[in-house]
Length: 142
Ligand SMILES: Cc1cc2nc3c(=O)[nH]c(=O)nc-3n(C[C@H](O)[C@H](O)[C@H](O)COP(=O)(O)O)c2cc1C
Image (cartoon, rainbow, N blue to C red; front, side, top):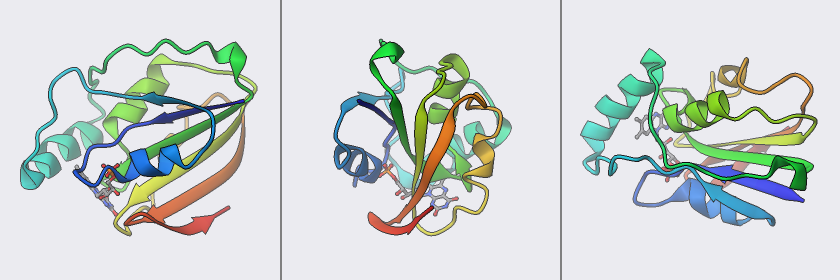
């Protein structure tokens, strides 16, 4: 059984659509504060939060990890790396012995994305796939 964990910000909700294409239980990481909607401000605020490594607040998620043998992590790439909300979720939630698929939703720049998960996923888990979607289209799978 898969737990699909995702964050999605843009009006296109690309990560959400990608997440929904996986079968399993879906968990959405939602910021406590209403998201900024104006794209230039999004780039400044969320880019800053992501690059600076700051903590962010999201609504609590109740996940019974024992129900799942697979975890799928879907989120937009911010500043080339894992975005602040998915990072915070992974800092707060340690899971063990799962098969993990990491998915990037981006506009084409994702060089540091998979590396930026280092230290966020316990080594007892197995990364089984890394997928990249550019503007909603799957362009790379491990
Ligand atoms: C703060 C911020 C930083 C971003 N940085 C990148 C980036 O480094 N590379 C890239 O290809 N897209 C970047 N984007 C675009 C999103 O990753 C892309 O549009 C993604 O598909 C949006 O997913 P969503 O619809 O689930 O929010 C950025 C967007 C935001 C808001």
